[in-house]
Amino acid sequence: MRAKSRCAIKFDGIIIDTEIKDYMTINVEGRQLITHTLDTADIAGRIGDVITASKVPARDIKVYFLLKAGRNKEFLEKIKRLTEILYTNKEVKFRFNDEEGFRIGQVTSFDDPPYDKNVGIGSYTIHCSDPFIYFEERESSGKMPRLKYRKYPVKIESITAKLNAGSKAIVRNKTQGTKIILNGNFTAGGELIITDEAININGQNALTALDYVESDYHDFKVYSEDEIVAEGLSDLKIKYRERAL
Image 1 (cartoon, rainbow, N blue to C red):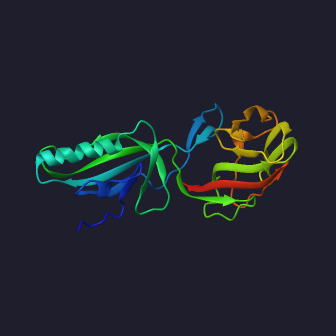
Image 2: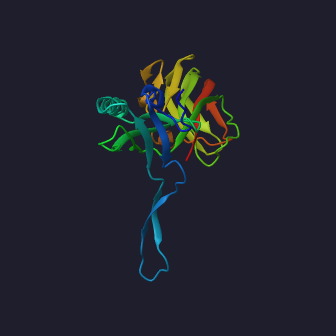
Image 3: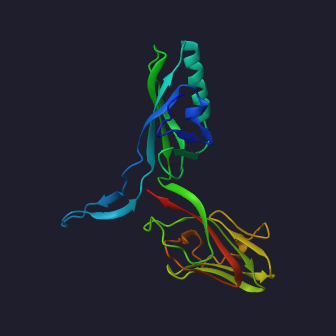
């Protein structure tokens, strides 16, 4: 029985280490320490410099693999299958056997195994424009629990609630002082769904109801132990994922 790699990779739903015979993920680089990159400016007469911008950069994760075959033709067929699995038109989910959670990325380069042998080590690089790793989806009714990674905001998958009859509906983060405000002639029982891409009421686009002046829709962040309340709404539910660098 083939030994199982400690860092076997599942890429876009396929466990490559079991999909391709005699393929084994043997090492992974790029998952460890990461910090902000800074843009700075020098000012005449000032000691040091001035930080003008700061961001967390993207990640490049390099995956090393061992591939074996009995004949050259078989080896090339396995390389073709690996290429097919890793070929995507967009970023996809992937994860490794030795850590919880998933990442999102797209393969951008390969280093082939030796061309003149039927066994060898190659590699491929997965570019992650989003450097975070994401964990299982959880749900809160408003009061966030104490999370393991408390410095990072959670990824909000959706905010759902039932509308009350009235002209205003508000989802408010009392801890952070941010809010999402909707204005309109609302009917009781309407189903509100808010994501980072859309606002729907009963399945219909409701972005026109958003108060763009007073709302923090694009800056509505939720952290560990935050308190989220609803006004003009009931049955508030927040689906989210904890994340880490």
